[in-house]
Length: 366
Image 1 (cartoon, rainbow, N blue to C red):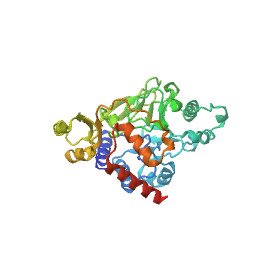
Image 2: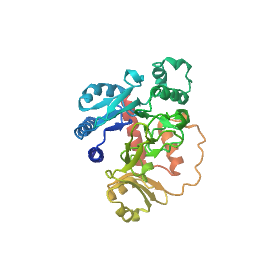
Image 3: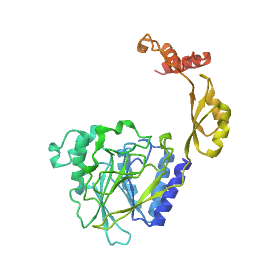
């Protein structure tokens, strides 16, 4: 939470320094659909801070967010210059938001496409007259939805498409949920509207330009390193300057807040020296051993309090295939079969006892 506070404070300061007209939040404001009270408190404090900095905010929910929760937030947030589009709506019925500039010289039309689950695509398509002629495949149908949402873009306006979706060819950051990415969900970049001044995308954790799009299109990426697959990524935001009829000028501004994620590898006696250069980074530790060592995780965490994941590395040889189908075994025997195959060793008696105690507690709760 302290990292989230720091990076969102940095975001508010940056919005004030740049005197931005609007902050576009392209989904996944929260990690969970039912966020904790602390997470909600920080969310509201950040939006109030952006309002006090003179920035308007437009938000769409992503696959991590609850559209119903954002619908409940919307009336309150509108009082502090925040527009929420919690579900897909036709352009003339709330699907597009008009954002005036600070100086009043121009306005930006933001077409908002929140995350659409595959099971709900039919509901979104039914809002449009031509939907019965749209392809049934998710990716092709979503392409038609983007076209319908931006059909009224005019060259005399600043036109922005903001969407939470996956594009074909996007590079994953490392911590995304696999169920919402992949070929079945991938929208061809060529189907992003060429009439857009800018396309602001959410969903992928790695900040990147979308190759193959006729309009400038980018994933903003996550504000913090969220997974050890993101250890080499520099987190940032994009500052976009554009005028009607002119190509957008985009600057990537790195963010300094947040603790790094670092992996170290070595024998137990070398770990302290290996960890010293990493400062306060969260550590993923690979301990090189001659075989299974019970309690190694606890030993490492006593030595390195910043260690959040500990793995043993040793020569496992070739695991023998189980001669009896695992599903035919009782839970205790399933556990023993798994441990023997994974570690090529017998589990310590205390571990088996702990498993049996947990199993009995689980049975008692049913």
